Length: 253
Ligand code: CIR
Image (cartoon, protein in one colour):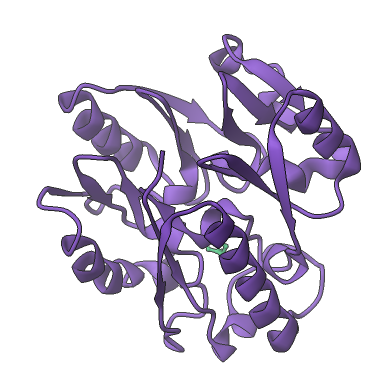
């Protein structure tokens, strides 16, 4: 159950942000509409939503998920593994201090992007990627284990972030794509197998009664509906152009 969501409006500089995709330049007006649609979807989920203003100095900062990982009792401020994003955490820290007394920090030379962290009940999975290194993953593991959670470190082969290829839907079920379909770490869960041509649909978010999913991925959606999940579809093309999925756009706690 989540009570709070933090999102951050994209600025005009978004269109010059980081990307590995070749899907073209984002259209800023469409981007804003899609961000609004995302907020509307969250409103249906009965959470309090805090919308932070855009900061043109940080083109990727609408992807707030990478700055922190939140649990009911403490916040972990991440250390994003790319130069232009590290100081996004300095903006997020005071916002989170309004909600949390206990803060932990990932410190250089350790790096962690929040997109590489998946929580399923009392278990954390931490991906080692181009953004999250072993030092950062070990720092993260130590923090959560001290607080009664379990943690598993997973080396990624192809995915950008861990959560690019896996999401937890609730009811012991994960949506998995690519290298995670047969990954032994996830064998104890029921699996919705996301086909290769719908890979982007593996990143979705369960918020209270609903799973918010990117629109247009009919095979994956059918499997989710057949498993009795209630879906809200939102448009995501302009986020996808900059490697962003639905989870990246919010902090949920
Ligand atoms: C970046 O390269 O950092 C952004 N363009 C995309 C971040 C996506 N975040 C996420 O998957 N958690």
